[in-house]
Image (tube, rainbow, N blue to C red):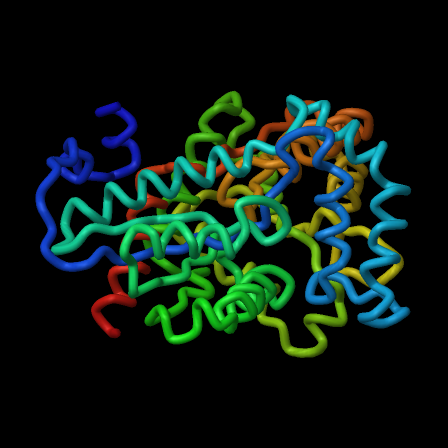
Length: 352
């Protein structure tokens, strides 16, 4: 553990055991927004229905009234293929388990220096626990002040925007109206500790390449795709992604070439590009043999890292001629990332 802390530049004092102490003030609630994922193979189809019913993530052309019906048809048609993908990573998404671990680490970090207790809950957009359940838990804990904290570092209407809209919908119900004082953290593409954490994962992954080839390995930053229409309408997602990539590179100060690709594109609409799979084929065509994949949009492991990056893209890359294909670790509970989240929450409480 001390070696990890030394490597990340975090003082061991920051990670001393938390000593419980009494708090006089009411607890502060923190609500983590995330996408969610099916916990079992039986959950896949209803999860897909929830996903494709959301017009903030995909606008099906037949209109809002018919979208839930069409979403069921799409989910039925795609269910078997998606179930196979989840079966290949253990039979379900680990995102809830990993997000709860992040919540626990964040709660401990906030309580260590704060003058009041913090209660950190998780609100998944397309699976359980949802916003309603999370608010019930916060209310039961005596919370009257909530900071919502997205686990999407780069803002998009399809991610944080959709979670925020669902939160506002639930909060407008009579039982919750005027119940909480609320503020929001909606993006943090430039947060220094977040960038430090990302740079640390990349630096450690680069160290795994043979020294003679290390500086020549291409770093492929892979971000989640988004319909081009959203960007044309002013969504800042691509700009935020580029800012994060530049912040990581500024910290690394390495000679490696780099490129950005966008993954997880689906449906008949035009998506932002280039696609990650297309970038890999292009690199292989140019004779590139060493590639480091950096999942830049994802702060925890789930289907996009464990299946798409680790299996689908790997198989395609090796078949195309890439020889050494590696991936940097997801942040999960990286100490510097938890520091970043704690700072974002603390700033909201200071400015409230």
